[in-house]
Image (cartoon, rainbow, N blue to C red; front, side, top):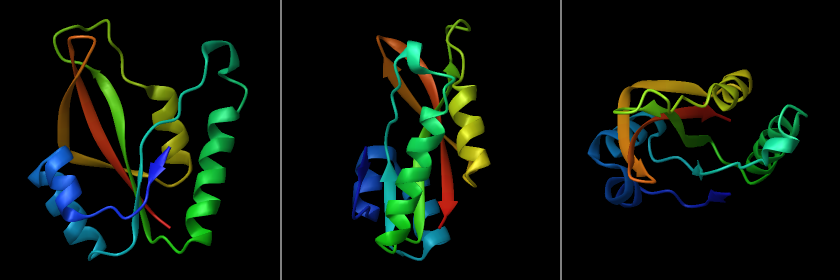
Length: 124
């Protein structure tokens, strides 16, 4: 899933000032897509489907003249070490050219657990 027309106000409301300012500074308000989620059932993982979906998304973004893509990635639990980071997704995104924004971390709650979320940026 992805959303068009990312804006400073949207990022500010949903993810805070740090990410909104980072985006505005790095992209100069250029056409940017917010890449939200890829979910693949466990029995279909490790078949290359995630990588194919990312390739498809990148192709479509380029066709629509997007200049940047930004996404949020799960980096592990804060109070529960059993909640691991999503290394599989991280490797796919890095392989496709996404760079982690190392100084911006967002805290989310999933099933009442504090989860550390990072962000990645792709120049298209």
